[in-house]
Image 1: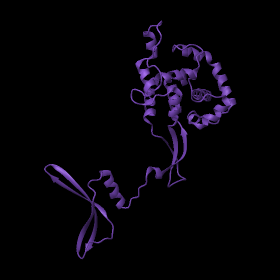
Image 2 (image 1 turned 180 degrees about the vertical axis):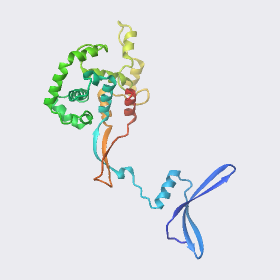
Image 3 (image 1 turned 120 degrees about the horizontal axis):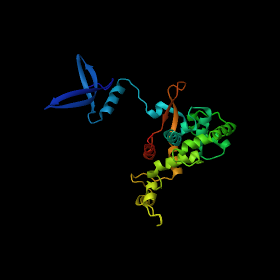
Image 4 (image 1 turned 90 degrees about the vertical axis):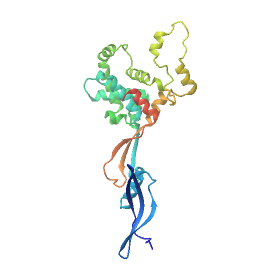
Length: 283
């Protein structure tokens, strides 16, 4: 009589027939009856995926497995995607080196105010409070700044105004243009396929009759009627797209079994809309 107690294991047998290889995975218990070693087959696992069979095999050998949700614990989650998008465009435009050729505290403060102006326009006092709700202050290392330091950074920027405007003029930007709107304009141009915007508007303006009434293109009419892009993504305004990107967070995590151990950071998975927004920015 087969024994009903004792450990079980996964036994794999390989058979070759007419050039093909057949594998059979059986859940077995081995037991001794007198001087004979017998095998009791408890089930056939061959229909399961290879990864599942390997998991069962290792588990029966004593390994313990936990889900990622149980293995790690998130102790802090901060919105990051919109900050990464705007800072990425600033670096892509070279605006940081245009404001100051060398990294310095004043330049970081000015850049932080530009990003804040695009994301959440507010007073200088509110700025120093609000940018702690995102990763902006951490990214630019200005978490300890107060409103007085921001005003001092603006005075530093004014002292460099002519130099900056001269550099911007060489890029065909009119003198006096606001730096935040300079970045915002480029963001909107890059995100045209996702926004209720004409794609290639500059070319359309050059080609259309300046006297005739302006008509929206078929692409814009499609987006307004279906509220979807050509790729089936929901069409956004500039503000709602920034909010959607802000849902991409930077999580600070630790190993649940070692609460006193080191922490690590991990970004949340991108949604299709967020992924397309970053792809259009080429970041």
